[in-house]
Length: 316
View 1 (cartoon, helix red, strand yellow):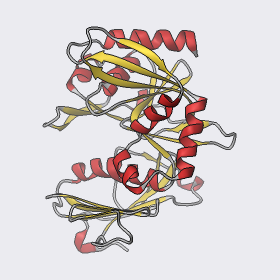
View 2: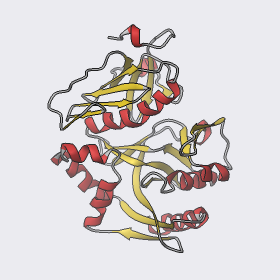
View 3: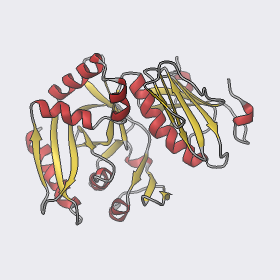
C-alpha cells in the first residue's frame, strides 16, 4: 500500500509498461518506458510504488546502513535521494528523501532496481547494450567507460536498431532459444558517442555531469520485438596501439559471461545458484563470444565497427 506521506506532490495513478519482457505497474509516470496495451495485460509481473521501506531483511549476506542483501530481498540507500527496496522479483518500493529529483530516482529504478528484479527472477542480466545488426542479435558488454555506447551509436548510424542500453535481459523462449527482450528507447551515452550521432532523435540532455553522460531518446531507432541472441562482444580498453578482435573459446566463454553479468558482485555474495550457472553454461555453448580490444587512448570507433561488421558478415 502506498504511504502518501512519502509520495510526490502529484496525483498518483496506475501506469502499465512493458520492460524486458515484463509487465510493470507503476504508481507514477515513467516517461522513458513503453506503455503496455492494457487490454492485452492478464497479469502484473512487477509493481513500483512509493512507501516506507523495511529497514531490516531476512537472512542477509550483507547488512549495513547503505546496503542489505539476501536471496529474495535487496535494500540500498542513495544519500540525499531515496531508500530503495526490491523483493521477490516482483516488488520495488521507493522511500524518497528528496522529493523534487524524480529524474534521478528513475535512473536508479531503471538501473539497480530492475537489475535486481531480473536477478531475483533468475533471468540473465548482462551489463551491455544490445543491437540488431543485419538480422543478428548482438550484445556489446564491458565495464563502465569501455566504449559500449560509442560502438552502439556507430552501428545505429549505419541503420541498425538497438533494443537495450546498459542492461540487456536474456531468457529462454518456449523453443529453448536464448532471446533478448527489448527495454526502452533511451540511450545513456558519453561525449564521444554524442559527437558521432548521425541518426534521428527527439531529445538529448545531460544527465550525469560528473561522468559527462547524456540521455538520448530515439523511438525511431528502437526495436521493440524479442529477437534471438546470436553473439556477444566483450569490449576492453588496454595498453595497445591497435584495435583487434579474437574469438573466445572453451572455459573462457563462461568466465567472460560471468564478468558481463549486471550486478555480479551481489550475485557472488549470494553464491551463484546451480540453475543460474547451468543457464550460463548452456548460453556459452549456443552463442559466439568475442573479445574486442581497443587502445586506452585515441578514437578508434570506426576501426572497431569495421572489424565487428566483417566478423558478423563472414563468421555468423
